[in-house]
Length: 154
Image (cartoon, rainbow, N blue to C red; front, side, top):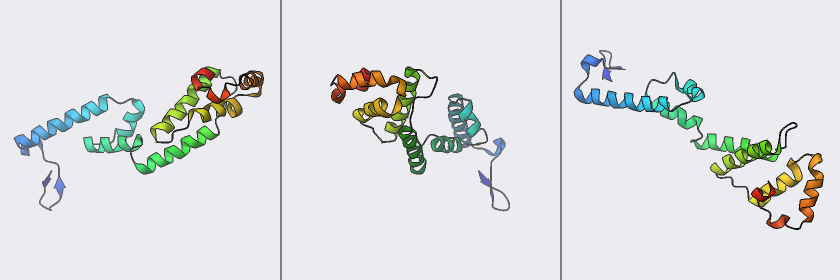
């Protein structure tokens, strides 16, 4: 940047740049290229109006939960999803388990770790539909429920 006649910062033209300025410009362009090339279409749409690498980085940082406010908000939303989690009609057990694991892993990444025994209990008592009742009773009567791991349940 340079000051114009009014004293306002304006971008330098290529002709006004020193060797050091050109080196910085090149580094910024490379960094911007690496960031943009690593993005999917959704992230690219978020940063397409950014003009500097710093702007891109800050936008991505907020979008990917790196600010305390965004993390708290995301954690609250995910915990609500966990609490209200059910097996959707027409979905397989494996599809339900994949969704459940995704929610609990995202919670863990935000610092909200749900103990394995709570996850097992949740699936056994509140997630599975009534049609699974005979299987649930058989597992509960086997007296291994206290030490049952989630992978063993699945």
